[in-house]
Length: 295
Image 1: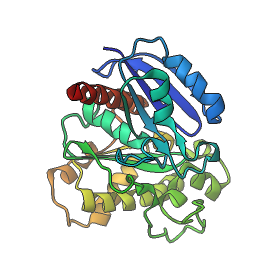
Image 2 (image 1 turned 90 degrees about the vertical axis):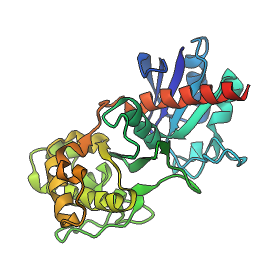
Image 3 (image 1 turned 180 degrees about the vertical axis):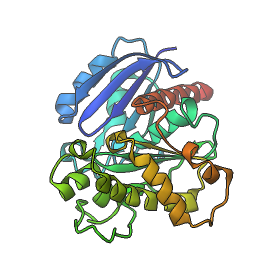
Image 4 (image 1 turned 180 degrees about the horizontal axis):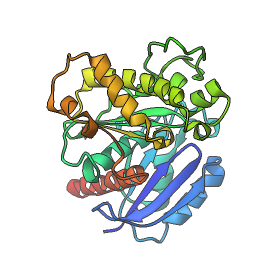
């Protein structure tokens, strides 16, 4: 069957048509502007494609509580034009098909847990480090939701002794995102991260912050695999530093097969840059299945 998938990001909307097996048949990218400009283009793309369901992995925060009148809305996003926008309702009215909805990072976690490098594992952490930092958390076969959804990019961190940068998060300054996102790297060194590829000191400090966060997640979530994605993680030399620091910071307290085989425990995304759109296909597939069970 044909399923629509939307990875709704702050700068671009990736639209695709694929199937329940995670195969992508076609894919386009549409700039994220205002809802009045962008939504008609998205709806036009999916109209007439013969899709039976649509899965959406969306930038947030979003409301995932199906009992709430705000379900399916983008809520307190800094992208003011999209604040309180009912993205699920807009597609439902236009397409009249089942719609699966979650955060973009939860969608990526779902893609990797279903078809990627974490396939078959019950507990998985997917972390994206780029313009922002976010975590998708897959626990005992389900995406983790609570009174909102994980916002693990905003945990407080211990500052590196050599770091004088105040942090770029407008809410917390020196949280994980404030110290280790792509804009934090650029703010600290006054140049884009891609211009710093040959600067080990940059990536050691970055790894120090990433490893701190991972140790917190390891101790609280005990994932079977940790997947690091996003633009910053395209600097593949950082993985060695991260793994080393994680072991040092754990200080031998956690003794599991996963930590013993840390090169296969903390890994890059297995689906390259398609984990989000493949996860959206899975969200659509599951929404179709749930809708048909109710009939």
